[in-house]
Amino acid sequence: MKPYEAQELSIYNSLSKNKEKFVPTTPGAVGMYVCGPTVYSNVHLGNCRTFLSFDLVFRYLKHLGYKVRYVRNITDAGHLENDGESGDDPILKKARIEQLEPMEVVQKYSVDFHTVMQAFNALPPSIEPTATGHIIEQIQIVQCILDEGFAYEKNGSVYFDVLKFNETNHYGKLSGRQLEDMIANTRELAAQSEKKNPQDFALWKKAEPQHIMRWPSPWSDGFPGWHLECTAMSTKYLGNKFDIHGGGMDLKFPHHECEIAQAEACNHESPVNIWMHANMLTLNGKKMAKSTGNHILPHELFSGENDILSKAFPPVVAKFFMYQAHYRSILDFSSEALEASEKGFYRLMDAYRMLQGIATGPTDDWDVTTWRQSCYDAMNDDFNSPILIAQLFEAAKFIHSLKESHGSITKNGLDLLQTTLHDFLFDVLGLLDVSEISEGEGDKLSKTIQLLINLRNEARTNKDFTTSDRIRDELLEVGIQLKDGKEGTSYSLN
Ligand code: AMP
Ligand code: ZN
View 1 (tube, rainbow, N blue to C red):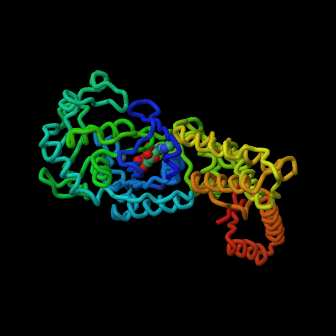
View 2: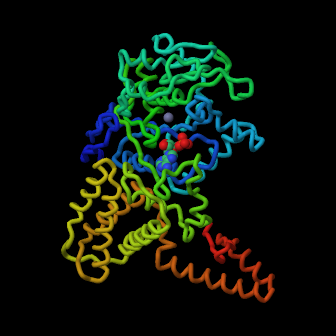
View 3: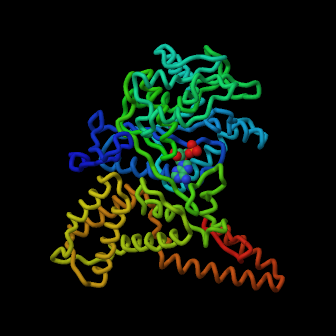
């Protein structure tokens, strides 16, 4: 029997606004699509939170024994600022600033994204398609929507006719917006606009002469609208109707609403069974965002190089911090909150390692089987990681009491406890076994490094730069990087 047959997983569906029992279309197999990053700058921790939320979903579905096809795209064309109204292509803009080919910009930030995801121990998706690699598929969908009568061409560009679509379908069903309200709340179309109505969105845009990312099409040399790539790539790899579509909450409208409209217009069916939306990571109470500069970058977190941070934090601690909140809740980032998570994380790791030395006894003073099911219950309830982590802390408490000989556990009980902790800590949450740097040992390491920093400072005061440089260089060789700043010297473990 597969584990999923013994568990009843419910997932909150943003479309129905209810938690629903999860029943994949094909028994035992799940198709999941998640909108990936637009690769024109480094991902910030907010982006990472969304991708880590879906890493948890991917891992848990796999843990339950499902065969999961997880598709997460790379947006390397078409995502215009201002939703295409007057905006520039940020990849082209960056290419001009950095004097690079647009594809060099794409490569640079795709590599950054992958490196960061790896540092967080996120699993790679099963397929990672790019928008530029699927232009033909996108052109086919534009043609299909035109043939169905839900789009019109104007001066070489093609727009989706939202009002026409809404006569037979429901535009706004995901975001809960009413088309009449949208119409009432929008300004008049600018005189130069080619659209029939402000709600219409671009399926294909004719390229201006300076727009060098362009492809031939029946309508013009141009490029696809942003919403189209996800319709093309999700249906290509997962079929016209698939199980789960995810993304950050801010993509619900217009991006996902438009995806539904495009797929319904062309395929005559709604593309997705369950829409999942991950909530935002905030900083100082405001959404972390590339555009406002209100963000922290992963490398700043790992090195401590940001005034907001009291010190450096390893990726696994940041991940643990994020999972201490449910994916549908807003989470505010702060150095203090991370420090609290770090303590908890090491406490769990210490407890896990303590299991090695526990002597078994004649009775079980703790019902491990019931506790194991509570861990599943937490995850079955819309991937409730904070409740799962609370259950793991309960186990840690029990392990500490065993260590102090205040209880007993049988050999079977101990084995089950160990397996369950291993499953949830490493397989499901995807934390890393940092037993080498547990809190106790980490403390010894940091005191030792501090001693070396003090010796280096003394050497520098005495102008003995041979010694001070040697301390810095030899520490670097073993993977410890010293950084001199306003507040003194800090370090990071590479
Ligand atoms: P982008 O590269 O801007 O398309 O964003 C990539 C993903 O990150 C999308 O799913 C966004 O919804 C998500 N995202 C952007 N900002 C945040 C944030 N502050 N917190 C969580 N997710 C975010
Ligand atoms: Zn998308």
